[in-house]
Amino acid sequence: MARFVIALALCAVPAVHTVVLGGARARLARSAMVRRLPRPVSPPLLVRASSTGPDELDAAADAALMVRLEAEVQALTGSGLDAVLNPMKLVNLERDLIKLRAELETLDASSAEASAVRAKIEDKERSAGFEKRTVMKGWLRALFRGQAYLSILISALVSYDALPGAGHLDIGVRVLGFWSWWLFTIPSLRSIKPLSPQEKGALNWAFLAVLFVSLAAPVATKEPSLIWWADAGAVGLCYAYFFTVGKEADPALVRADSDDEQSGAQRALKFALRAIDFGSGVERGQRSSEKTAIERQLEESIAAQARAKAAAAKDE
Image (cartoon, rainbow, N blue to C red; front, side, top):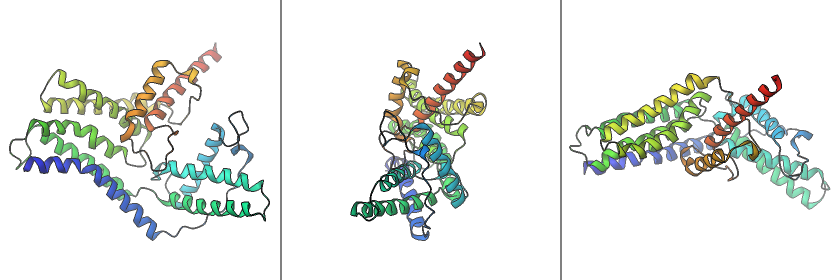
């Protein structure tokens, strides 16, 4: 019975994420009166005129949009865009608003089509205003971080078969102890918003490293406590790298839009990252075409290498 309770408690942690985060959003929805923001002027920069079609935004338009949203969220909440609970939903709403306003300018102001477009714009403006105010509060960040630290302690006790009052634990429960790094601890930390670029990068790569170690380590040892320490070492190394060697890396989200700049191995790695990146806190409202957190991290590295090569060639 004790073993069943332990396993049930560990498996309930992701559900706590959903309940707590959903409850926080519900309280914000009930308490916040969404103030209508002045309609931002859509500069010509935000409308793309290229071979990909008028409905798409180019990299420069995305950059302008991010700068504007950062300023608006900062003015409303005192926090940056990275503290918004659903940033991709907010970005998608703003992209839709840009397209709708551009469409409205082509319609007769008194026509039924124009009225329908104006209604859509008002609805999306209300939704965007709410999303701009829905940021992660300090108590929620502390809860997720405390949950992650508590899961480290409990998983260590489970791996060592030393949980007080539980008696002798079955090997299957002890295995869940070292898998808790990948299932609970890292996802809890990655759910915190905002995170520093260093910690975000460390957690992105720790998510991959712990998965590899947890799968490969049983070949060398069947002792769960040793594998737990191997996972802990992988997380520690990722943090050590990103807070020392990797801290000088440019955190800007620079995309390598051309697949010609990426090797076959890099494209394969991006595919693998997208396939397993279900624990990265992918936001509600993110479109399937959007890049995942780990994929963006990889592209940042690729873009940095491309910039370094271009600078070296220019110097020559």
